[in-house]
Image (cartoon, rainbow, N blue to C red; front, side, top):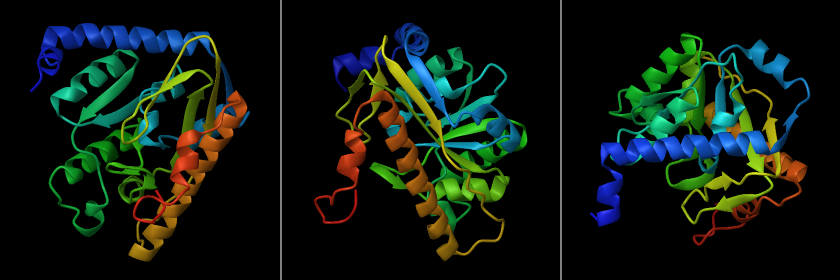
Length: 250
């Protein structure tokens, strides 16, 4: 393990970094002029009750911006040491963090799968307890391809999946697998909520795939719209629509 990574995992250092991170994100939220769509999004979100806020993984840094003063929001972060800073920063911003592995497609075949089932149960409990759950929809390490895990979460909780995109006109794009994006202060912002997807309790594997594709298409649509509102192209979305190295959609 490198020296910098070793130092970064020390509890005192992580607390300081989380304080800096949360302070910076609050600065970005305050200094960008945000447009929210649809115009009646507050009434719509309140009408859904606790819902699953679906996001692409690269959006996870700024997803806390969607939290309104009266919202109770939870999200899931792995128990790895690298997740500690994100956990502390999000907690400072009013988001409750569940430390567990996420619910992924393998739970479609085996609801007892270690790790994934644990995270699934925790998120279902949060939704039934009145919390909205922010959840990245991507297949692990595959950007902008929706995984079936989010469909299972909606199935077992009865809560709708509502895609959301949060973008800023000025930002830094990281060279990570998810092309994570960090907003910069003093620009324009957009927050776009998509149409809800409800999943019945009884659903076939074929229907799961149809629903998965529906969520994926709506996530892409809200991202396109958000970037249009801030006057910037969604370069990750453009790349994801092209064939990857194996010739399949990215």
